[in-house]
Length: 347
Ligand SMILES: Cc1cc2nc3c(=O)[nH]c(=O)nc-3n(C[C@H](O)[C@H](O)[C@H](O)COP(=O)(O)O)c2cc1C
Image (tube, protein in one colour):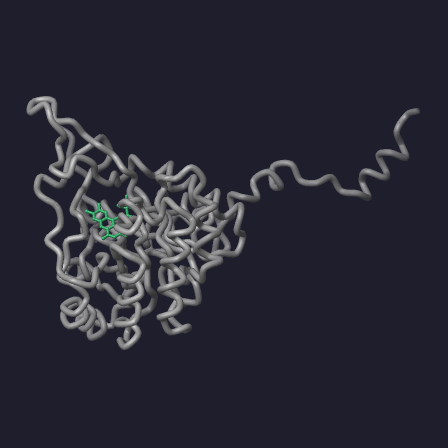
């Protein structure tokens, strides 16, 4: 009989690569970690705090808040899909007043950086929310969730139209302290995400959150009807990662300097590294948290290890690094060498 090899506990613990500087800048924010939570996947962070110290991640991005309390859509509002999930929660929430009193106050007292996500039915809703938040302390940034139906435009999602996206961002910018950065959260359900990204930046967004869920649908083949009561829902999780990485890449190509918070299906440090190499200054971990509540901190450590293994000593040096692959693989020929070669060439 073979005997099990018992390893000391420390041999099993992941190696810590503290030599890699994980700090990053995102739209004027200095963050000690590039890993944040994703809106709607960790409420206001209270539940996660029992699994890891919230102050060690970049920030908590809170669930999108609306002006008034809302009960969300009818159930069932979750469906499993291969490598992902579909949700039609419908922005259930307590409304801005209760959010400020309970959640924002708790985050502030806890010392966690808070990125407050806002959502509305009309441009005026967003303006009202920004005005109310202007009076509050302890807000690191505002993330503007524009993946909501615009009731003033036949329910067309704001983020699917450059003009509507721009109107929302302008309204929020006008009513927000200029020291508080605004991130516009984009939808991938568009023909050209760079057009919407440009419109948001021109309207005053300091950075972009890329991406929200993709619109999807599941049919229940036993009940012969849509699986979700709301018929369609938002697809998230690893299934959407290649779409999300593509969106970050495309925006980075068009706007080399715009701060990007990348997200979509991040489970591991290597997943996060894909986003950073594609151009993300920081990343959000969403759906994975339902499976592993300590995922944001774990992803931070795994990303740090992955960077160390690839010879990076600072996270910021890896941002957009993949965009230089052609130059690295086919370096421009040395002009001096070219001259020598030309001079020695046989006629
Ligand atoms: C259950 C659930 C609720 C969500 N709620 C919000 C929300 O309130 N506001 C928002 O901007 N995004 C919301 N999202 C989208 C996530 O923030 C994120 O953009 C998306 O899920 C992709 O990341 P992931 O694959 O890591 O989850 C939600 C996602 C899920 C799964």
